[in-house]
Image (cartoon, rainbow, N blue to C red; front, side, top):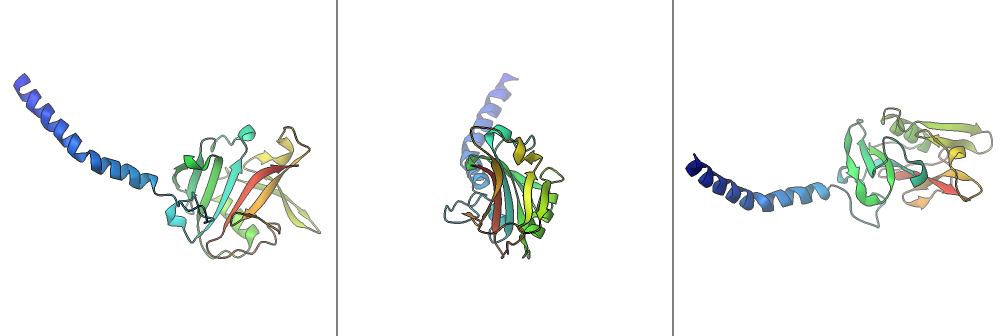
Length: 184
């Protein structure tokens, strides 16, 4: 019996050694599924979303989301989880792969619904300023505590602080909006 096991072990070892470069390429392909371009608003998002609309919600370390507490979970427009990008040095979720939205508020509400209630949005309507987002994914800005006077959900559009609120935001193909807690 040992006469058969030794040659079989050697053959198995040779197969593993020969296939190792292919396995490494496969792992590298998996790691390369995120856009790696610091000049792009899609940096860190799945390559399949490049040129499509996406929304990201980033939670502070002090108030991580129970479902999205490790890395940034990527959720496709059909609700399927694509993966988690740990390289973003943040926690939260991005939902993307959308096309054709023009109104920021419509996009945000539809895209966050795809996450099955995990990213639900709470807001109040101000007659002068439009919708004021106070809660995303169960995190209300009034619950955020620390060495600051107050907190709010800050809106970015294509990597830049938005000069308009979500109710006035006009979207184009390939836009990425993101929300994160800011303080004063």
